[in-house]
Image 1 (cartoon, helix red, strand yellow):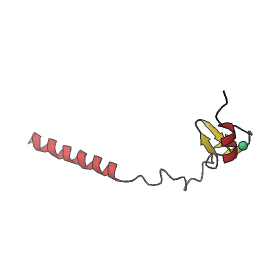
Image 2 (cartoon, protein in one colour):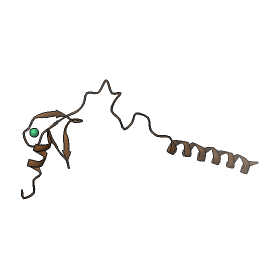
Image 3 (cartoon, helix red, strand yellow):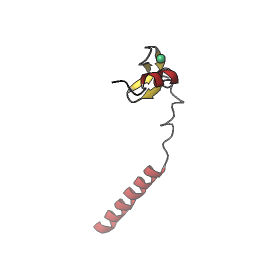
Image 4 (cartoon, protein in one colour):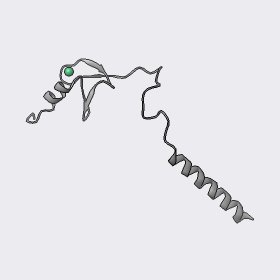
Length: 79
Ligand SMILES: [Zn+2]
């Protein structure tokens, strides 16, 4: 009797895990439905202008306002 209960619990847990890993996460990766939270501002490492993070370009831990500044600042030969 105890073994039967154990197997039922085991199968229920397995099904729960399977469903959890198979289901795609809704609205987790996309930032479409965010109203309360404003986009965080980041500073361009080249010219110092502040741009929203979703519009900025990242290179390592640095942020840039445009592609030209990214290439200027990360050009090889510095340091
Ligand atoms: Zn810039």
